[in-house]
Each structure stands twice: as C-alpha cells, then as structure tokens.
Length: 338
Image 1: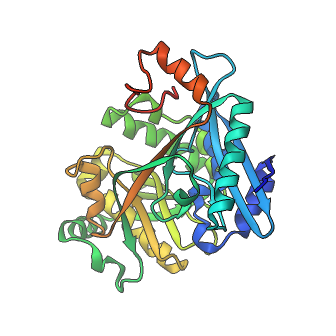
Image 2: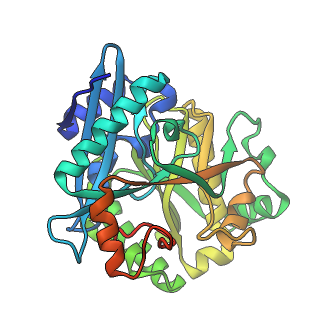
C-alpha cells in the first residue's frame, strides 16, 4: 500500500485532530499542545506529520532535538506528557504503510530514533511501529461517583476538610498575571523538592500554555496567599480532564491544600461532562513512590502507562551507539537521544 506523508502546520494538524472521534481528543495529545510544549527548550522543534488514505487518517506530533555528537542528526521524543500516532484506522496494512512512510521521512530528515510516552486513556500505542513496554501504573479518578469524593480514601477526605475549615478558597483563572505568578510559584515548589533542572520551566512556557483554550489554572489561596496551584487540560466536551503540573507551598502542604486542589478539579471536570480526572503516576516506578501514594488517595483505579522506542535509521544510530561503547548485542538501557 503506497502512502503519502506530509508535514502539516499546527493549524492544519489541529483541525485534523478536532475531526477525530471523541476518544482520541485528549488535550495533551493535541498538536496545539505539542507546539506550546516545545517552548520548554530552545533546542526543540515541533513537527506534525499527517497521512490521509480514503477515510483513514494518521496524525503524529513529535519534538525533534539535535543529537549533540552527531551533525545533522535528530532524536524524536513525545511532548512533555504523552504522544504517539493518532489514527481512525485499525487496518494492519494501513498502519504498517503509514509507519513505513514515517520512518522513510525520518531517515531523509536525519531522525535516528524515537522515544514515545503513551497516554493511558488513549489507544495511540496501536499505531506505533516500534517496541512498546509497560513502565508503571497511573491513577485516574472516575467522575461518575455521586458525591465525587466517594472514591477518596479517609486521609484524603480529612485533608480536604482541614483545608476548607482553614478558610482556603479555590478559584479558576485564565488571567495572564496569574499564569506568570504560577510560573514563579511552580519553580519555588520544584526548588523545595530538589527537582532536576529539566523541571524549571521558564515564563515563556507558561505564556504558551495560557494561550491554549484547553488549559486552565486552578489556585488554592487564603487571604491572597497562594498555597497550592495546578494546570489542568481538557478539550471542549472531552471525556478526560488531565492534571498537567502543580505545586504547593510548605504552608499549603501542612493545610492539605494539594488534596483540595484535586477535589476542586474533579468537581469542575464532572460539571463539564468529563468521565475521568487523569492524575498520572509517581516520579519513578516504585510502588511506594510518595507522589503515587498521594494520587492513590483519590482513586484505586489505575491504568498502565507504556513507553515505546523505535530506531528509524539503523546504520547511523548504531554508529552513534558504538562511540558510546554499545553495539547490537550490548545495547544501551535506553535510546541515545540526548
């Protein structure tokens, strides 16, 4: 089956995304989000690739970043969050042909390999032609409960009640000044946690997120002092609201406002018709990860988070690997994309 692949503008790709069935329209998989997320680093180049074949479509948004030790060579990675090809087709011949066209484009453009993170609420991994493996479990909150907190554990409900008794108020905002304030608040939270430099996103990143219709900012505060805040993503009418980023001050942690934050998000998601509030997983694969423990306080329902790897230009990739002391019999633990 011959297949024509072409590069799309963000507007073209977003229009195609919005034609997909509702199950595919998860905000963090949208081309608009991928383009905004590329503002994390000047080295990232966002590309959107599309295939049309009859009524079948195939859409893939990735970030390309240069390989430091290989001239004119790139690695492809999913945006911060999730990625993977989106398609309306389950035809194996179509999927194979679309993937072959994508790999041919990668070889021609110097894209040696690709790493992908798959959204647990999306079937996008079925269209990925590389190897896929489960990485960890993630937490998602069903919003059909009445009341919504029926699925929370006792500790989480106590923390929410404590925050409300303390006079903490929650508000949603799209105001530019709040997004700028969130950038500073978030970075302070990451500094307190001793987070890696990767997570210290600049103001331009939050400016790009603020411009997305799918992005909302939630602030928990008392007497004008921010205690917890988070960014949530949801396509209009989408079945999934997603927790993207969040942080709390030391006082907020003591008052339990991080739990109030998710409770308020769950209530808004339910009122907007979402079936799920997706919280994600821990910071590593350990079952006793503290972040995972916090998220499990809202739901016992977990989903597998999978990652995928594909080598697009076999010869050039293994040439790079050889300079790092690896070969096909002794491959690196993860793809060499840095």
